[in-house]
Image (tube, rainbow, N blue to C red):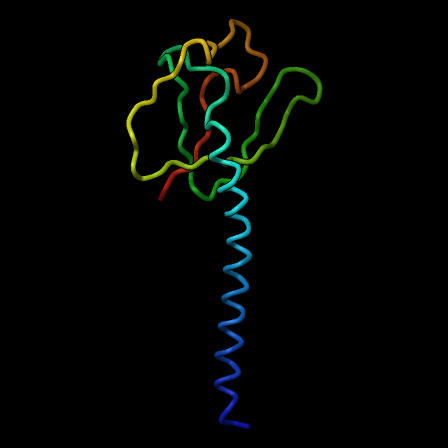
Length: 120
């Protein structure tokens, strides 16, 4: 019996490690499915830059708060997008696709600055 105890402990450790890797993989797979199908920016560009601006936050950041004017217009949403290490260069943004910040914005998404998680 004492001979098999170390083998039992190793088998249990391998099983637990595989289970935790599957659990982490399930969370990443949902992110991997959602992020490529949606753009990292909203429908507005930053007026000073003429393009949407990515505000890079820690890769551990998962949620962001979006403030809106009016009753009950504050939301907490997930940060899905993440920068990759191989930055392809500046993007071409169609002026018809994006709008400038309105003179009286009614939501923080209309400023043209969007959270993106860092790669480190």
